[in-house]
Image 1: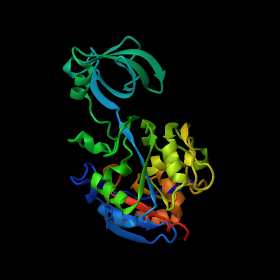
Image 2: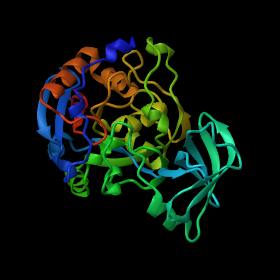
Image 3: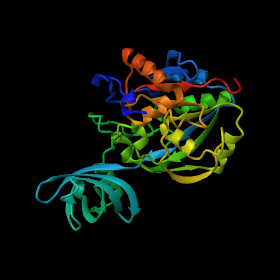
Image 4: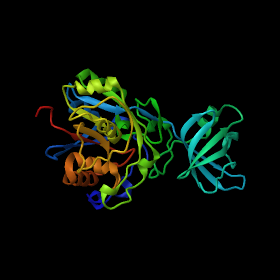
Amino acid sequence: MQLTDLHFDLPEHLIAQTPLEDRAASRLLVVNRETSAIRHLQFRDVVELLHPGDVLVMNNTRVTALRLFGHRPSGGQVELLLLVDEGGGQFVALARPGKRLKPGAIVDFDAGLQAEILADLGEGRKRVRLIAPGSLADALEHVGRVPLPPYIKEELQAPERYQTVYAKRAGSSAAPTAGLHFTPEILEALRAKGVVTAEVTLDVGIDTFRPVAVENLKDHVMHGERCEISAETADLINHRTGRLIAVGTTSCRTLESMADGPGRVRAGETVTQIFITPDNPPQVVDGMFTNFHMPGTTMLAMVASFIGLNGFRSSYRDAVSHQYRFLSFGDSMFIEPAPRGV
């Protein structure tokens, strides 16, 4: 499989810059996994698409990374992306520009907040200590910004709109955006219908935005991401009577990383580097909700693993022609499997 297989023309104006006021008001393109037939619905119609006994699996990670903009005493601009809270005011951060920030350097931010560079960890990452005149938490709330993807140019007015309504486990640098469309009301209606909801955790890393840099996809090395399935979730999945539906590529990666034979998963935790493609298709997941992705990405390869390259091309061509909104704050796609046993 070649990188050019994942190309399509994405008009810039279709990249959504802000979330809709109503999470469930987004559009939903439904593509049948068996026939590639396409339907155009609204996301709130999802209750009609899932069946009693289906298991809907969501990634419950919460975005806890923060972006800070400051300057060195010389006046040079500095950006820190806080990735890992190590406790005691100490963080692992991605620094820009990283080369000029040596151990011992000080960076000043608003609200009297300062960062001292403690160590160079490689690949632009630094260990830093944050110092505030009062509460560090208050200073970070005042100064920190949501780490939106680089293709979003507008500032987010309501930071919680870059969190799913079920986010709870701290640790991510980016949101599992396929879940942004779900509301408490939709989840309640699905459970009332007999759909089983379950949670996994995958900590989404900043590397998720790095493009594929090789022409032959077999040469691409996936970045590692920590993921986990609890014993309770594994039991729900392994004893289900319906289909297994992943909310987003991160949930799908988690489930496939912990596959324990066709249709089954094991409980546990790992750092996954799984790369799901048409040459390495899913073994456990039947269907998936996902947003519309950038050309030439690993997420797009995963979409093609469910519906083939022709199915991907026809559905994305349809999405562009119908002016669907793309990427993190965009519309939704449901790769719909046949009912179990059909």
